[in-house]
Image (tube, rainbow, N blue to C red; front, side, top):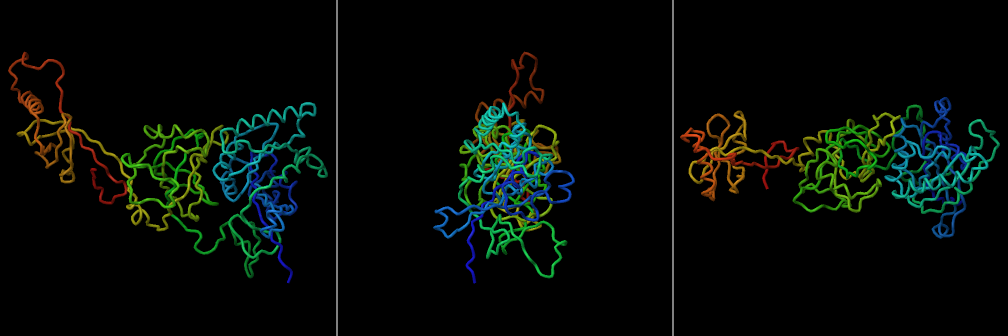
Length: 516
């Protein structure tokens, strides 16, 4: 039996605005095409655009370093992603299996809306990028070099504040003459693209026998006694490597170019693996009185308390985010935030996979970024009844703050208060909670006083003489004991405020009030 040739595969994603020439570049580079390559789909041919992921490949001789590891061939699998705005789900899915991103720019138009979105997706999913300025054949011959250099400078400035600063920028004409050009016209500058040596991670062989496959590989699978027409797009994996989850906890990093708000209870189009599904978000952050945890920790800490965030980037959260920088991946000084995502249907995902949340209901013709935030999935809830079985473990609290007025004192150790509760409030829930007076004393709620919502407070350390005097004055005025207007104190009379502060954990089935 002949020894099998050992091939190392490297996935290259072709991303860019619609009609920038991605498929033409893939076609010019490839020596082997799959059944899903070069817009063979009838709908793609009819509309003249890429509608789904296309796969093709070419190979180059192995390098000396790779030969030492037994690899005799280096194969590049080209993942041709759609560019139309309505197909961003497919673009995000394709971006998550690539090792290198090629951002294709129409040199006659420069950065366009989907170019920018693809750049952001690349920042979230891919460590390396090459920029290709395509369609140089459409530039006037006398100005071609000057225009290419000008666009190169623009792209360098665009990339300056991203993780791709200093990325190679190459100018080519993948299909001279465009769609109406002759088929036998040779592409220009393509050889520059094949001279990109990078470290690779995955193994695949087009139309060649392989003994195993890993995430990102392109495989043809022969199944006996099976109608391929019954098969829809899905996932193939080893047992136990994927879980079906109904909700998840993920880290959060806002995309700085997103102009919308990130509000709790809002729904986002959430891409996990190759699936995009609507999810309702609940944002939360570390408790104010606890040190910031390690965002890179492999496990989520369920024993810690977390602060409920109504809107990410609001109030204190806004100051926390001010140091994040302008890049989607900036964040050495990033404050830790998380999100609970509750999906409208279960999704299959691996552990610690990339999560990208978008607002795909935004008008595709608006010049606005639709990518909202991204992060890493830390916990997946596989139980359908996760809200009852799992969420009570998640200690997210809301700070509650109520204020009332001290009406009078019954001796130095008891105060009667009002305006803190409604008359229909169940006072038994609040007995034993601590309160503070604006004059500095601390007390404990002992129970109701009458039927109008008034309540009794015990002051263990006793009231000061000044507080007793203020409360006596208040009580005297209310009872009409001041004899004439001359006895009325000059200026506004200060009242004594009673403050009740507590935490309520949003997933606590008992809805208990907790004080630190």
